[in-house]
Length: 61
Image (cartoon, rainbow, N blue to C red):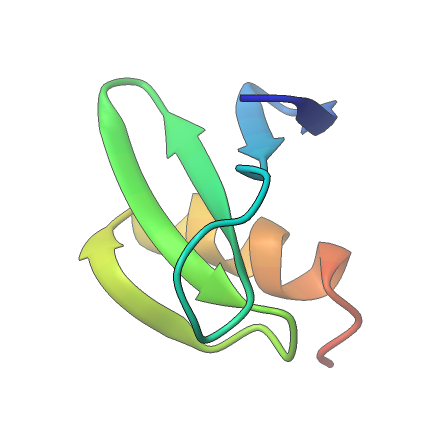
């Protein structure tokens, strides 16, 4: 799984030819969640602060 970005301990990765809707995988300290490109969490869970970092990274304010 190619890593797109790493920041504050959060790893953002994306699978090639993955299922719809388009999304990224965010991992943080044993947690994992899928986020749509608009910053919406699709499934999984992350601590609130880590989820906020991912949403900021995706451009959602």
